[in-house]
Length: 551
Image (cartoon, rainbow, N blue to C red):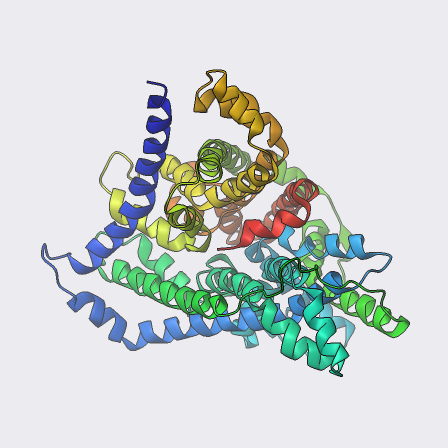
């Protein structure tokens, strides 16, 4: 009888993932291949063979690779400097590197447009003829913004990989006469490839299916925007699900290739190997470290700078900086009826989804760490899958699977928004609890169970207090990323009364004359909220924070 609550709990989790992860994906395939009542690949093949579909898929793939390349140019040197050198401001630098993550790229797009617009700061300062940089090259504008936001994810993974390399291998190469660059190219970089590809998978998939940034910058020739445009016509446009299937297959293909390639490289070392060698940099190297960091920081803060200026600008036209400043837009953002309602909606959606994530994440982590079950790797993979699952796929899946039911998002999207947020943020709570359990001895739990306590009571009275900090860190990340979710919010929330925060920001951008300014003020508030959440999670998780962004 003592096992009954545990069986019910894990059975509930299994049903939850089956109903709101597997079933929606099947719903998309069903709409794409069984729209006539029997299996027919004709619609899918026709959609895939269309020149427009091929072009937007190519654009999205190239965009993903461009974001990975630009992110790598920033993240790899930073990770090497932080992992291999000890200098005075190292802790400050390693903390500031995470600053770009405090601003979702689609919100940053509002600010960056002010910097590079026809009469923006860059053109005015350098006396360049009126020239809209982002209208001239929307593709590279989107890739640039995505890289500025996503490079910390690659940095976290690369830093962990570099720190785990056995210094004896590098020392042996140096003893044999290899020059520093040769050691890095032939020893360090190959051994760090698993960390690189772990981050590259996330960056590629995030960029490939990013919806908000292309929408704001006006680059609509990508698959995410095409799916968004077709999402409201799902019941009479069967090509929509077919296009989503294309995205699922492309996502699976690239994820499989990257994971397979990264699996070929194994961090090596002898038994009892030592961690990576950390050394004091020379004056020249120290200047390079600080110079590169300042360059990256200035570059990555451009969207933040532009957003803050826009939110404070009372009069900003034909001048490098605003002629007058005001706080009126913040007052409007805090009092405007639609915004207040969207904030309340987001707080409710995110709080409920975070509660689900904490309960399910802790239970699954305890089950895998403490029970040592067979096939644990498969359960781990399924739980971590949503972090690589694009939001547009899950959102469109909910439209396909639940339209016309009691959970119809076109009538009331709140339940599916909560569930969708929970499914996609479950990996954060799970991984945080998993890391905490690995660091805590099971002796206390075993003592409780010997005394007659069941699994549920043991977890609530013993485990939770011991790993409370990890649980809080995972909850913080789950909450703030749910609060600022874009794809699911844009696709599922159709009626204004159900708008979450990000949907309201996009809605404001279309309002004249002060919609951009109010949206910027709201974006600044989101930025500070996300900054506080990341700072709290980083302080609790420390060097383990990178594990939250791995697949």
